[in-house]
Length: 170
Length: 60
Image (cartoon, rainbow over all chains, first blue to last red; front, side, top):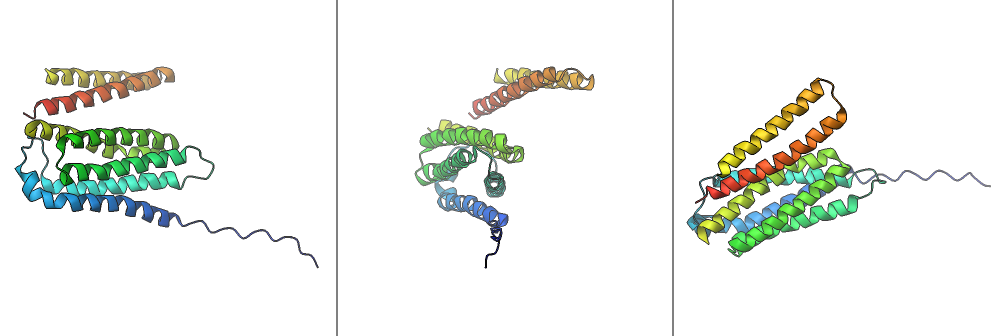
């Protein structure tokens, strides 16, 4: 006997919150790794450097970066879970990965290797990568682009800070 | 010097923003609004760049 083919059971979508958790884990993971190279240098090497007057207090950096990492994770997640047909998602997420890698690289170059000049090169590359990511994101999802605005603003300021520290200690 | 440039840039941003708002309030053409918004974004970009330059200049 023949039955009409049963419609295929709908594939349960990979839960959206699980994808969000992955992005949060990746971004906060980068934050923790960066903090691990940074922390041992704060009291010694970093404290001895001349800083400009607009240097924020040390305690501020942790909370700021935590918020920024969470915001960028949500932005990337929003792009990742866009409905299937949307084009340009893969390059946008690739740019996101590049900026995240450069973000970690900066901590290793500045705090790990004490190369303030090379850190300027890295942070300018990071700025460009964030800018490219922002442009790619905003085309696909306005909110995702807006979520990156505080990030690029902070990195703009951090670039000036890095340049000023180079100038004062070069 | 860079402080003067910063004030000029900020006034330019405020001026263009105001023109855009006036155009919108009067129900002016959307194309004009678009053009003014683009100008504002660019001027804002330049103003932020000058502000960062001024900050850097003041670091010594």
